[in-house]
Image (cartoon, rainbow, N blue to C red; front, top):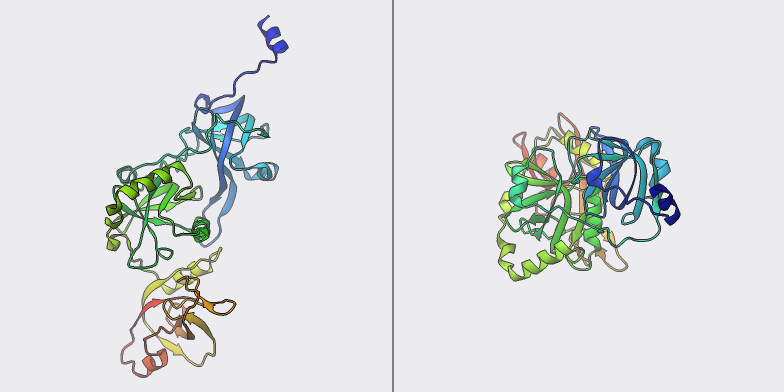
Length: 378
């Protein structure tokens, strides 16, 4: 009789909550908001990595976060339908507990899309399901979980100048309790740069999701992952709250010691050359001490550089523009290229302003070592 009543009235069971999911296959229906999705890749040294599938960050009506996964063989079936912020239903799935590193959600099980799964987008929005939920942790929490490759939590802080460099060149993230260096790599670095450059005014507060705490050179470093997202100033509630706190506590902006967050790394010319050849194209500046074996002169190649930072200038309607200094009326200098032969690699050095040319160095060279400061590989 109870079954007959359910059929007549059209009653349906409530969607399965993430906290009720058990390991193995399930045929219940879930309803969730897709917060974020990204490509999962297996790292390959010197390459872009092997594509494994699409990872998803989902939230249900209780506010519980769960991680989902779409394998590479089902990418074409689902990827075009994925929209951040949209509501989805999922029936038939497989809950796996095989992921042991880099958790980004409360639910330890990963909800995998199987051959029997049916996932569809709900046309209407459901206000009862949160649009965002952050797992913000403190400096002490990141210290305690450093190098464990476990949970990836979120951090919020303010940006600080380092070594007197312009903010858009070398920003460092400072939290209320301490300062850390924030490392951004590959696609995450490019996404951050585009978002930062798109701001009308220089951002003050930064929230970064799913950061990986590491210790580099004795200093805590929070590295962005493929799953990381960046929010600035007034974008979300935590950044608004931090911005209000910072307004009431302006002394916090001077609490960081720049020396502690600048890390020197030793690289060979071959390693630097390999870094530059990686895709997508990246820009990096190095301090280098090199041993010159030979100098090849006579090259006619040159470029027009910014007098202050030696970056190649862009041509504007009436002036030359420096993309690094943001100077729309930059002073130009011609930079000549010289080729330096070392025992390990052939390298290109651009002459620096205020220094004598490499030709003059060769004429007066009485030893086989020469210090080159702040050179740029082109």
